[in-house]
Length: 68
Image (cartoon, rainbow, N blue to C red):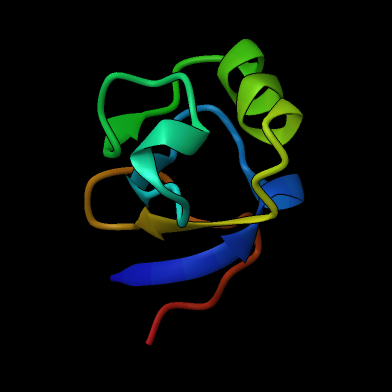
């Protein structure tokens, strides 16, 4: 399931489906990738990205999220 979440809720193990910005607005080679560590999350936040789309079928969900 694709979910839009605030950057503050990102955690390692989540799969970024879309960074919700233009490809020139971030330093990553791809727009879709698995978050491996806190440094990547800090980099996303450092570029001013406020919300991203995650894919819960390919990575972790938001802690405490209920499944449908």
